[in-house]
Length: 138
Image (cartoon, rainbow, N blue to C red; front, side, top):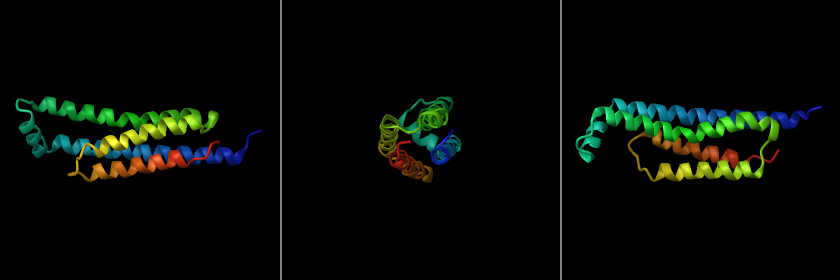
């Protein structure tokens, strides 16, 4: 016999995590696409790194997208596969809350103020941290 209210709460929590993580990855991808297609951004990078080829620049944009997408992907996958069986415990909140907090600090210290997606990703990470931190143990 299962406890339906707890399962509904777990399902709502999972949906929130998946939606926020998907939006973070979407905005990171759009920002990377804009950086890859904009010649002015490449020109500024070329001024700071003389001899940088366009292929190297594109590789760095793609690698940056990959690295910044790891955190929401890991949180989503772990939550998807474990929330129904184990629920949310203190170690989940500490580990993934800390991971999200480090991601927020890292984003803020990048100072990429020229992109609206920079601010949207910061706001979404704060929302993700709030969702993880406020969820009751189940």
